[in-house]
Amino acid sequence: MHKFRHAWLVLGGVWVAAIVYLSLAPIPPQPIDFEYSDKLGHVLAYGLLMLWFCQVFQKSAHRIQVALWLIALGVSMEFLQRMTGYRYFEYIDMLANSVGVLLGWALANTVLGRIGAMLEIKFLK
Image 1 (cartoon, rainbow, N blue to C red):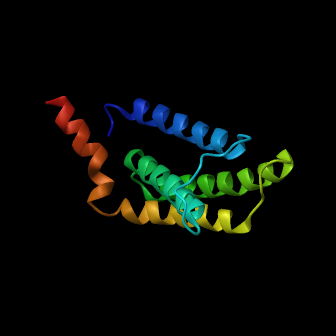
Image 2: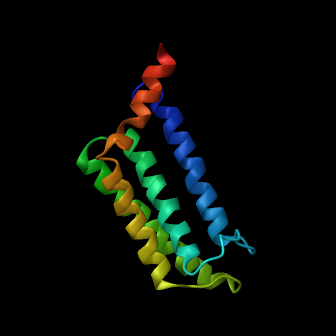
């Protein structure tokens, strides 16, 4: 994960920017329509984002920092949504974001946590 580290970080930054935009856009993306489908979206977005950054940051101390930063991002997005006047503030969204971060971290300890390295090896051949 050293050869393309900068690219991984830039793409992760773009992903964070997309989450910020989608969180504050006047018309949010329409989720698949079933009860709590939007919460599933929060879990997936933050979980996959955490898994993404775990590809770059292998040390536990760095992963803790990333997890805390992403949880703070999820909390701050809710407060900013309340300030917009057209989006809703929900504690359960904060919880869903945080659960996603923890799930992403847990998945990083499986084979999914090595996908980035495997892709780099494949493309470096």
